[in-house]
Amino acid sequence: MSFSERDLKSKLEEMEAEINQKTTADSQESSTKTVFPQVEINPSPQMQSWIESGKAWFKSLPKIGKATVAIGGVWLTFSILGAVLHVVSSILSIGVIGFILYVGYRLFNSSSESN
Image (cartoon, rainbow, N blue to C red; front, side):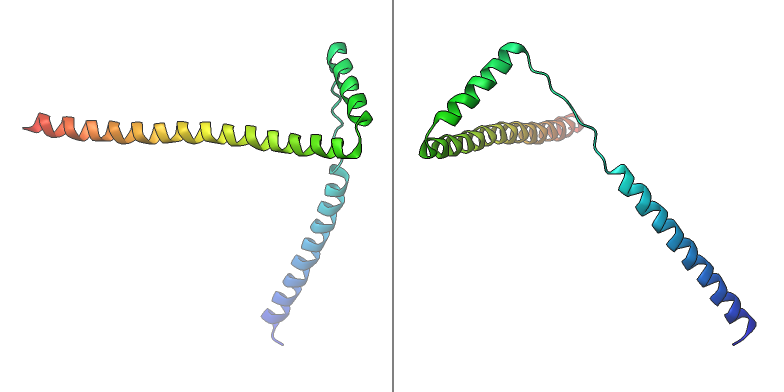
């Protein structure tokens, strides 16, 4: 083995040791940083009473009633989400049509000015 090969090999070993040292330090740091802060939500007393009465009402339902309410809640959530997506889609469509009309107007206006 020549001198340059030994020199390259020792440099490579040094770099590997440095990388291993950094990755172990990073993994120790990331394991301590994964704790998320607790966010406490304090609803108003009126809202808290509504929540408690809703919980009590739900607990008093039979199993079929609970399943029906859960299915209805999922259906209502998807219906609202679909309506919001339709509104966003309509806004985007109007924006694209408006942009196309604007570009057409500018092209038509510039071609009539040159005549």
